[in-house]
Length: 263
Image 1 (tube, one colour):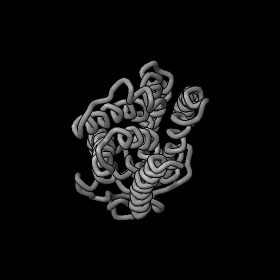
Image 2 (spheres, one colour):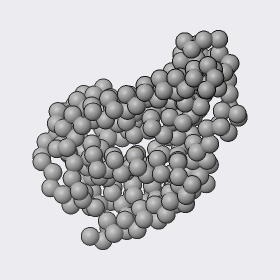
Image 3 (cartoon, one colour):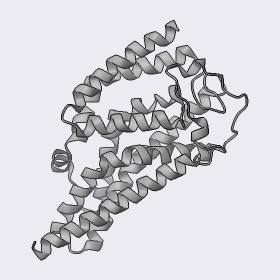
């Protein structure tokens, strides 16, 4: 292997290790409860119809900033693996043209920061929704899962229909092709890298944001639902049959919504 090839390989290892460490830290913090006062394992239950589960009375009484932080750490844990191919590819391209490793790493970090900033905005929106659902009695204050058949069915059906929508498919196509994305949207400089991350994050929110809303059904901190949704996102984005699997999932969600109203 040439010295240039060895340098590129080392760069991929460094960037890959950094992404892996970030994801592991996020999952570890989620396991501990993400500041919500009880571990995620204590808020995890296996149930197809969570609204039928008996949840403890009361509320966690977590501050608004803690709830935003909880959602954001969860998005970091769930979504960062799916952006890894883009970040690694971007780092390789930069290393071939940038003047130094430091410059390449700085712009790669800016790309990842822009991507995560988009999910931070999503986390703020999710927190607003949670703060509306809980006082209305639609969301358990302690277990953070749906207490309403109507809410569960509405979220499941909306997510199912969105899975089969042209907008979902268009966003998914952008997320599945990092080479095409970089070719179409490349911008120079650190600001350009951050903007590139924001743009890609917007496509990913368009692709997966409605799936994340399913956590309002199964439990915002339910590890089973979090793991299942993470696996679904990775399947859609990486496997050849991902788009078809996503559409099939949409049909399952719609059937699930109907069953929720009938039980």
